[in-house]
Amino acid sequence: MATASPPLISSLNFTCYTSFRTTSLPTCSFSPKLLRPLVSFSVKASSRKQVEIVFDPDERLNKIGDDVDKEAPLSRLKLFSPCKINVFLRITGKREDGFHDLASLFHVISLGDTIKFSLSPSKSKDRLSTNVSGVPVDARNLIIKALNLYRKKTGSNKFFWIHLDKKVPTGAGLGGGSSNAATALWAANQLNGGLVSEKELQDWSSEIGSDIPFFFSHGAAYCTGRGEIVQDLPSPFPFDLPMVLIKPREACSTAEVYKRLRLDQTSNVDPLTLLENVTNNGVSQSICVNDLEPPAFQVLPSIKRLKQRVIASGRGEYDAVFMSGSGSTIVGIGSPDPPQFIYDDEEYKNVFLSEANFMTREANEWYKEPASANATTSSSESRLDIPNEM
Image (cartoon, rainbow, N blue to C red; front, top):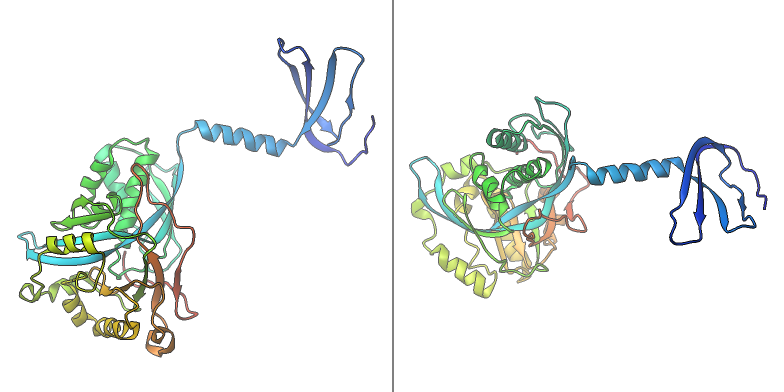
């Protein structure tokens, strides 16, 4: 049976003589040559058939590459790096080392960055790139600090190419940089064959940041000490409970906030009572205490005004409205939508807006990226123009 003759292409001639008897194996031969993509098929008057098949060489090479990748050590990762909110945050004292003791319910939420890691041929330097200006890509960045820490602790000689797709604003009280560092430690361990446990990564991480150990929880934790003492908890919230994040364009300096903190003006409610109440009754305005709000409101009075207006305009739409961490993000839990004045007032045309939900992770896995990205702005201007470090 003859076929039409399309133009010649370079291909691989695969001829396979297959016996109809199930007890024998095929006898195959290969010969590279120029063939037409449609070839003849003939059946001889015997107990054997001769079939000539032409394969697409690119497809075959891709399959070989996929098979090799399956057998090769892991060489690249793409990971979600979620941020957090502090549902409540009590400051309980000043330490001799200059830090403050805190007691806080941390929870991961669905807003986050995406980070790609690849093994580098370099044996002396990591290379970090990012999609936004103003984020340092040298040793000041917590990602590079985390990778240096991993090599110091394990003796690994592997370096990395990293690309950070940043969506979490800085100076926001959302722990975006701390999450990036935790994600980098987890990635480095995976790309080194899992040399150490997650518990070791968690313990080491406190050397470069107080909030980093939290991200090695499963997503909800009661944190004390500087924040590095992490008690993993089941999430007390449904994952479909919506929230909106509103961050003014101005960042809030954590150092400036703590400088203005007056311990005699903080809340006197027992943080364990707050934890018990939120576990039994869910979120409410009375539970979302943040001792850093008063000093943060001194640093940026616009945050106080924003919180007051969100509460007044929400008309009961939000279960709680509060500042996360040291600011400047205001969180409204109970609705994914900001009040209308955010869109109408010139003062708020450049605020960062994002809806989010609570989320956790499974054991021995990292956080999974949500199906959709919800970060937006209330203007047509660029959402991220980051003036200070992570």
